[in-house]
Length: 129
Image 1: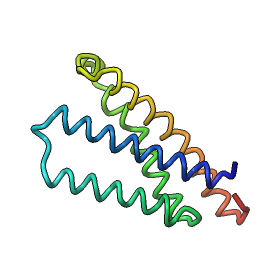
Image 2: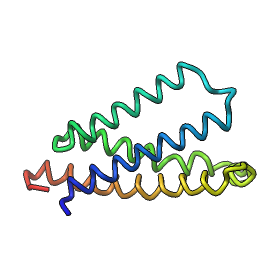
Image 3: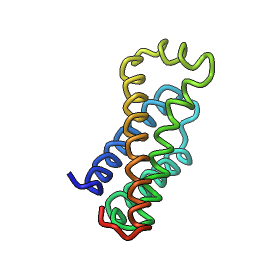
Image 4: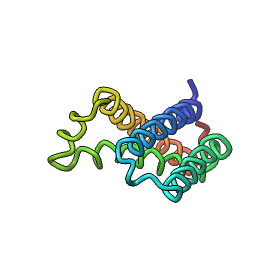
């Protein structure tokens, strides 16, 4: 499979997992749910989708996908870095699904980051992907 196709598919999976994760976060802490946060999340996810689908073969698309993958990779770190983070995650009624999404975000985020960096290097050298 072509590297650019792998990057597009992985980035789309990452966007899907991010939407599920953000929805779970919004539902878990409904006090933080606001129109402003939903619009910001929608704007960020739209930029990620735009970069993935419309700019996939360009340097800008690779940079957007790299930033999105680093954002996804940071989700498990952000949630589980605190000492209470693991306990909070396991105390949730949807603990299995929540932890699975964090794991999936970490895997797809890391994989997409590696592929997008490789794609950026190939674009810089003028090689096909």
